Length: 490
Ligand SMILES: Cc1cc2nc3c(=O)[nH]c(=O)nc-3n(C[C@H](O)[C@H](O)[C@H](O)COP(=O)(O)OP(=O)(O)OC[C@H]3O[C@@H](n4cnc5c(N)ncnc54)[C@H](O)[C@@H]3O)c2cc1C
Image 1 (cartoon, rainbow, N blue to C red):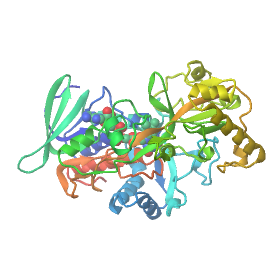
Image 2: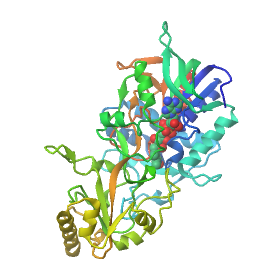
Image 3: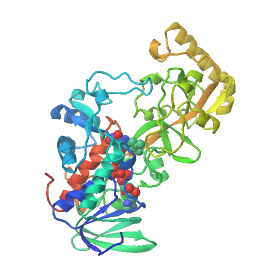
Image 4: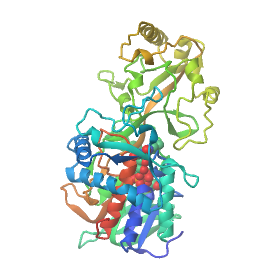
């Protein structure tokens, strides 16, 4: 739609999970709400996500656990607000006409022995940190109205926005905010729409819910230290909200944190594919052609392991990229990525990996030595690495502690290899916010009229327990939307 007026109570910036939830809640509280979205349609990362949401088994333990994982970077009240929001979330989703159900695979508690790699981990990714047993299983979105996973959640939100007649303008990129010269209140939004500059007045408040900076090279280089591929929709989350908030005096937090998944990037597809290997005949090697871990003990969010181990004197990251090396049996066992999830669902990645091999996305050669040449690795070193791994597998003793049952020798070619990167699911940094969603200045004082939600300025830091950003988008969106009209969400 085009703008009917330029005078609203609440203006929400970004139409993903956080923005939609904020709009619904502000509208419920009686506000006239406008949502501005820079892309041609809403959804953002939310609509491409797995959509897993944590349940609460024991709130006190869960709060303790999450607060510990934040390592002092997030105040206790913010963690408490999040867990309270998680408790309320299923009822709110039901009220919105959505359906979520516990992940059946994980209901019964003990470790799920799934595909050997990455290993499925029940509950939190940090089972040895206090309070871990307070974290419940994940909720998932069953298939509904043609949508599943994160897309089902976004479809529910978009339906609720539409039913309420909330104004949504797409193709509108917000560029800056204006603070009132007398009160200091954020009261006006500047944006570009249809090639024109527009300005909208926001009497009550502005909710910044524009996602993170997975697609902003400058911010990634400055904060995480490397420009990494991302699994989220290309070029949407470019850190606009960070800069917009900074320009009106916001303090920042969690800028060095991102959720990293092991993944691959192939020509013609900008977004990354998540890695998932179904058979045991494989290893991961670094740029020197050497193994560095028990590959079967990595979980879906352990991509950060590839950022570790910098060569100090050589000023290089030895594992950026690393390489998945596997044999014919592993090729035939199933796709080495999750082609049915995320942004690249149309890629045609075949179950036996033959299409990516034919397209040259996966390198192949009759011998390990030949494969090394194709991957640009030292052939003597890679041959030595595979020989050592195979000898360990035969003897039942792996140098990196990989269990004997998980070690299958790579004996029969052809052999295959593909570069593996730490790929960003989402970033966590952005404007610091209070438990009530107020964006704070560097001294901790709320900036009047400015609210934040979602992965932009998330409460999470670098230790990510898994499945807590999607729920946070909805919870913090609700809180920010209600706070923008001066009420606490019920
Ligand atoms: C493949 C994948 C799987 C995931 N799975 C899970 C999971 O299972 N569980 C979990 O907890 N988390 C998961 N996540 C992360 C989680 O989904 C996101 O962190 C969350 O959905 C972010 O919601 P959001 O509303 O903050 O941002 P988004 O949904 O990204 O929405 C932000 C919106 O703001 C818009 N925008 C940006 N700049 C501007 C601007 N200047 N003006 C106007 N609009 C702007 C963007 O275009 C975008 O539409 C996953 C992420 C990915 C990529």
